Amino acid sequence: MTTAHGNDVAQPRTDWADFDFDTRQVHAGEYPDLNTGLRVPPIALSAGYVFDDFDDQVDRFAGRSIDPIYSRQGNPTNGVAEARLASLEGGVAAVAVSSGQAAISAALFTLAKGGDHIVSTASIYGGTRILFGRSFNRFGIDVDYVWDAEDDAEWERAIRPNTKAIYTETIPNPRNDVTDLARIAAVARRFNLPLVVDNTIGSPALIRPIEHGADIVVHSTTKFLTGHGAAVGGAIVDGGTFDWEAAESAGRAYPLITDVKPGLGSMVDRFGQGAYARAAREAVVNDIGPSLSPFNGFLLHQGMETLSLRMERHVASSLEIAAWLEQQPEVEAVDYAGLPSSPLYELAKRDYGLTAAGTGARTGSVFGVKVRGGVDGARAFVNGLRVFSRMTGIGDTRSMVIHPLTSTHATFAPEVNERLGITPGLLRLSVGLESPRDLIADLRAGLDRV
Ligand SMILES: Cc1ncc(COP(=O)(O)O)c(C=O)c1O
Image (cartoon, rainbow, N blue to C red; front, side, top):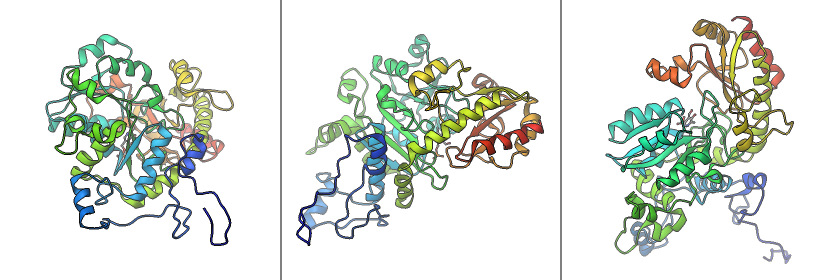
């Protein structure tokens, strides 16, 4: 490219595929704006897009052109976030939506309709369990749970001819009971089922589920990806790994992805490996309408620029705090798979690796601590905290605490909570980016009241 000064300069780079994670989190998805020179992709606050001419409008509405029609279906600011997240997760495409709950719903509605069935691992975010038990149930989509993911017989009993997906999470909260994704992926493959994994708490800086056999990844981007607790959002990532046509031949139909539209073909014909993401965008997100505000899309793509740096600090502080908590007389137990004392430590080490200091595995910063004295002990502890915020939320720069039994898990039957390990003295911590010394002093002050 020759500048106005006659200098021969290199074109701005747009393909970041072969770069390291830390480079891609800063650059992937950005587009050079040669008109204004803006370095940061701007917030494209426009509900719609101008058609080149009459026939361009006809082509866009007929699906012959994938240029955007309306921001419910796609937006350039969100497009930066989508391309960046797809790159970080190692997927082929992503769709940004308005919340994590919208991501889970849209991801699964693309696969299942009324009368269909989903199998999920039992230890998942409480809000997802509520979503499955209430709204999915009302729409006629049944969800059954597998309690022991290691037990092949339990999977075999749960999976039916009308099952359309297996659903799990990388690091379930509040118990930090990390999932053996490779094992669940093997079950999914055996039954020709796509594996959908919520990676909200792991984030692609710690684990990339597609590398462990997942086909689709969902996120509440509200948490670590956006990173600062300011914007609700969600995303679906298509790994491009699932063979939809082979599944259909084997008796599991995914009509939104494989049905042939006259004159256009199927989503697979048109979008190949990205067929699932396109179906989610066009046939579910655009229909139902949980699109992401470009303002939140901006905060998301900007937040991801520092993801790996923040996650290293979140993890190092969590490990220090979890190891300290374990030694305190007021503490009954700490549920943090990254601790060498955890029964899940070997799996945590295998899938998440060790911290730079080598003191434990990198299993995020959301974990459980059981204080003595049941609900009364929990109440006294929580009421004594001044740096940790008493609130629902995780994955923020700020540290937070909540009592799951009386909040996220308050609507579940006592026997379900007992089986999930949600005991009266259990608290969920989300360790932020404050100094671990200050956080430990705050926790000490809380424990002094127990
Ligand atoms: C693992 C997980 N998935 C999904 C969600 C829902 O996300 P959102 O609050 O953005 O709808 C949450 C929220 O806490 C979560 O922790």
